[in-house]
Amino acid sequence: MTSAMPWILLLGALSVLMDQYQCMFLPNSTYLEDILIRYKEEIPRSRSRRAISRSDREEILQLHNKLRGQVHPSASNMEYMTWDDELEKSSEAWAQECIWEHGPTNLLMSIGQNLAVHWGRYRSPAFHVQSWYDEVKDYTYPYPHECKPYCPDGCSGPMCTHFTQIVWATTTKVGCAVNVCKRMNVWGEIWENAVYLVCNYSPKGNWIGEAPYKNGRPCSECPPSYGGSCKNNLCYKEDKRAGTLETDEANEVESPRLPEETHVWVHEKINKPKVVPKTTQPAAENSMTQVIKCETKMRDKCKGSTCNRYLCPAGCANKKAKVFGTLFYDSMSSLCRAAIHFGVIDNNGGLVDITRNGRLPFFVKSTRNGVESSSKFKPANSFAVLKVSVQTLDCYSTVAETCQFKKPTAHCPRFYCPAHCKSEPSYWAPVIGNNIYADTSSICKTAVHAGVIKDEDGGYVDVMPVDKKNHYIGSNKNGIHSESVKNRKEGKAFRIFAVKQ
Image (cartoon, rainbow, N blue to C red):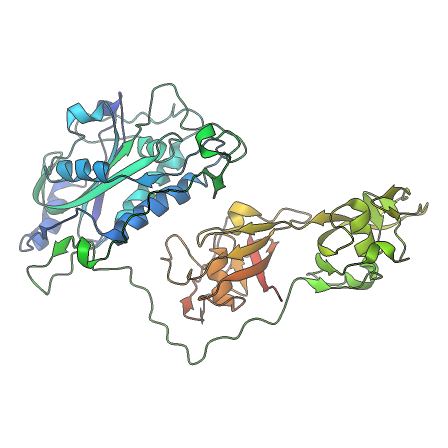
């Protein structure tokens, strides 16, 4: 740890156990004073209009919903969170007090609250939100029995109440504010120019004896008011109140008094490499989906690593190509007619995923969906057919979340990516690798990097999960700088392909 690294402290979102958890480690006071002396000449920013910029507000809200939608075990009743201006105002009022504790007392009976403070180099509000969520490492669903820190003056032991407030299923509103405190007492130490983040939540979470959410299939236990609508694993309904779009000019937060200062919340952004490629990479020509005929057999076509997705033409039900077996089919069977027989497509054709199942001793005939299969009583290689679904993603979805590699094989849906994922920050939309990517990479941002879709258009992509790699080499392609990682111990990988329309 170097002297350039900022010290960051967090306070949990608490209800009735608030006093037990107001705690974190503090650095050695002498060392702290040595670092603080470098900041004594800095002047805090004056504040105007709103307490937080529009871009920071959107980052905080989007990250909350992304994290709520990816909890493990999965949540059946997790509700979509929205920004609340009244909570923002109450956060602003408390942030301006520059008091390092939860408050005000009369408000804490009806809201939840997360706090964070730092000084030193720039940290975005989303950095603190991610830090709150990362307490998940000390949490075991459904109850935080192991999260009982000892906090007389500073804290020791694991804490997870920030995490549980973020993922409290029935908490549907959040409002945050940022204030630069000229002098702030943090457990007996005076911090100058401390950057103080307050987030208030409603309805409050962290009720004693209750789990933060119900475990189950996402959106399977949403309140009736949502009408069965689901978005990114969250109970969701459209906001009918269409407001006026807010501009940065109408939302100024901080005005610098000294132009050379760089310690800001709004104007300093994540440092991303400026990539100016000589030419834009053309869309990839390779495709995972193979276009076949009604007579094509799995034995004829399935000879490579990508032989698991096929596009069947219309009219195969009326052809005479043979099918052997039921449920599992002999490799000499027509792929498309086997898919009709099983019921994953009809006579109009469509996409089929194939899984090779090895050698079976015999195959039994049956008639299904207008296709009659034959029996075969001698050992042969077999396959199964699966329906290909289509799933719409956001810019942050990963293969690790949707269809991670599992032996002997794994199939992903066909994905539809939105436009403009290229500009998403790498800390929640990373791209790791080149050609073969780590499965924690953003699928849609990876698709732009690989050249299988254009950023301004978005579009469909196919993904093939593969087993893990130990090393990933980054590259600059299509305006995106992917990361290099060595000795990656966890997670799997994937390849990504263009979809020919």
